Image (cartoon, rainbow, N blue to C red):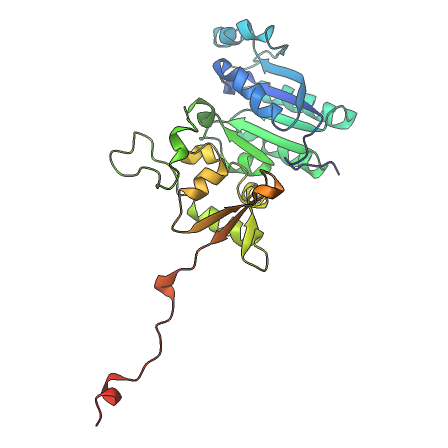
Length: 272
């Protein structure tokens, strides 16, 4: 079984793009995201290149060495692109030419493909919109929402990470989900006997719980910043002498739930 951990970068990856379900304006960021996990040596995009909606892709194909795969639509309203992509993916899987796959689409039709690849012990990442059905998201090792690639997150602005993310009517047009339940669960999975959890281990377990977990979804560029924003729940310790990756997290005790001290009943206390 091949290593699917982000701690060790994969070798060759196949990036397979569903041209009907992806944005050409994001191609640079798509390649950058895939490059965090491996080297996308095989780059293919599938679609009917005789239709006007594919024109936006034509300008960037040569610049980024992406091979267009022609797939005619045999019936109006039917998408044959997914079948061509799936066939190519299975051919690549059995040829053992790559160590991982990146499927760029928001289409749930690729759920079984992602599951089948993972059954072989091969890493699968998906990239698509937040509307992507959950079964496809969960079938991948990692899933990146394209909205997180378009959000302008400034790490310097988030340096005051002791504050909660903005909420309420003035928080912006798009409300963000609550990360606390996932953070608590990942901490429980990661904590040692002393009650400390390594930040990297927490990150790995967060991906296990939800492949689409991404600090950018909650308005933060890094996991450490997201945790610092919830200073009422967690404390962070960094051991500088062990390197920048030696960061640990501890859950703060909930004093409100602590049992009150036992004392004499009021009636007994007033007895003479």
